[in-house]
Each structure stands twice: as structure tokens, then as C-alpha cells.
Image 1 (cartoon, helix red, strand yellow):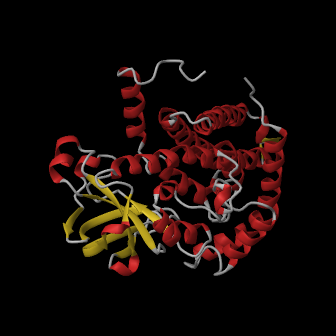
Image 2: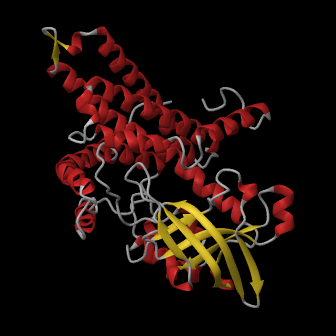
Image 3: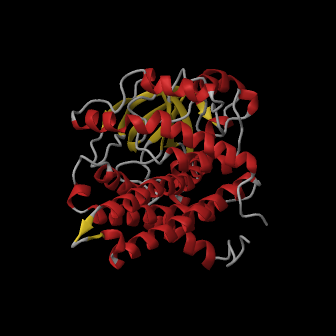
Length: 391
């Protein structure tokens, strides 16, 4: 049992940290100003420029198999990288990657969708959530009806990340109504649907900077060859996509909380009340201490979920734990940090209020707190997982 990063992992961590400090954090004031003025966070082409710099530094396709030109560093390194990148709110993603379920594509689909996505030539999104069906997949209404060599898709999806910019969507629809009504899981299929096949997207305004999309399918015809995986096998693909995303939320929360805690520590040393720095006030010290403890706990929950996945084991239970605890930890920390900063923390002169709005989303998307608790409790009560199993 080894509870420390390897030298290679430390080297990657330091390199990413330097990149964030040198290339991303200096852009934060520009991002805040652009967002206040209703402009895109980064000017057109700036993200591409940053991705090229990252690629030159050796960070391209961090978790993409080497056969597709990626670095294939594994899930542990993915967690470490995300923790570092999340120390800034500058919207940056490393290029050279694709959704995990897109690797289930057949060879023809890989040439048409997977490889162009990895190369940055196409953008994708995944769509399962509907206006009346979030975590409760029994309420999915979108249908796909066979018509010769095509399927006709009708329905709506909502809160789809990347849906406004995507060139194609991997969408879940009911293909066998009887099976779906019987189990709430079976009878759904995943389709790859190009935007030019006819689906439309609409921007959804939120309290944060995240701008998801609502997707509308009105008699959209999709050829048979665009089925991803097996007919009626879409539910498992959806679970795999969501399961991967869950512990990622925890990783992002850890990185953001670390940056926020450091801001609180620095401010507490500078701000004085009644002749003393507030860092000497026990009320402040306890908030800092509690935040530090919770961040460390969340870090190891995330790394354990990633480590388990790297070793080919089912990490869904651990992913739910990491997501639940990490998301709540992030909300706790940003609230304390805003409180420590007082009125200044509430202004848009500092990024704390922005992170406050963003952090609230962590407890909702990719499975709410309530769904994670349901999953964790069910796994234990039904004996799918034993207490103390992951040691």
C-alpha cells in the first residue's frame, strides 16, 4: 500500500501547475470582465492557442489510447491534472480526447466521429436527461421508431453540456417501449446523430456561467449504421458515461477548493479588525482548519475512485461517494471563503462569487446528492458492496 504520488506523477503535477500559473491564471481578470459584459469568456481562437501550447508541453489526449495519438496516462493522472486545472475558472480543456463511450463505435464510426473528435475537428455531446427525466430514467419519453433502414427520433433533451456547439450528439431514445416500461432500463438505444440531420439546440440561461442546451428532435431520421453499440443496449452506455463523470466532479471540487482556501489564508493574514489580523481570530482559524480537513478527505476519495478504475475494477460505488462528498465539500469551502472575505467576497471584483454560483451546480448535475445517497445506501443494503471492502 502506497499513499504518495510517484515521481512521475509529481513531475506531471508540477508541469501542469506551472502551465496553469503561467498561461491560465493571468487571464482571469479578462475572463471576469468579458463575462460581465456578456461576451465569451475567451476570445475566439484563444482556447485553441492554449491547447497548442499544452500539446507542445506534452499534454494532448491525456487519457486517450496511444493508438489514437494520446498519452494514455490513466485515470489517476486524469484526476491529478483536473485538480490542478480547476484551480482557475478560465474555461480550458486539454485537446485530443473524446467521450469514453465513443470508443464503443465500430470501425466506420470511429473514422467518421471518434478520430475527428480526438483531432479537434468535431465536437460532441451526450444527451440522456429530459425535461421530466433526470436521474429517473423510467420517465424517458424520447422515441426512436424503425422505418426501413432508418430510425425516426422524436422528443426533447435538456441541460445538455456542449449541446450548443456540438456537431453531433450521442442520444438515448426508447426503441422498445414494452421493455422500457417493464424495467425502466431496458429498451433504450444510443444513436449518433449529426446536427445536419435536423435536431436543433437552444441555449438555457443559468445562475452560473455554465450554458447547457435544450435539444429538440422532430422527426429526425437517423440511418441504421449510426447506432452506437447494440440496439436496446443504450442504458449501459449511459451508465458508463455518467459513472466516469461523477468522480470527475469531485476532482474539480478539490482543485477549486484548494485555490479558494489559499485565497482565504492570504486574506486572513492581511485583513485586520480591532488591531489584529483576522487570522488570529479563532472563528476564522476553525473555518480554515475545517476546510483543509474536508479537502484532504475529498482528495483521497477521488484518487481512490480513479485508482480502482485504473486497475480494471468497478468503481461506481466509489465514484458516487467521491461525487457526493466532493461536491458538498466544495460548497462548504466556497461558502466559508466568501464569509471570511466579508462584503468583498460578495462583489464581482473577486472571483469568489463566481465560484459560489458554479459550485452549487456540482450537487445537481451527473446525479444529485439525493441520487448518490440512494445509490450508496442501496449498494450496501443489498450487499452489492461490503462495508470496508475497498481497502
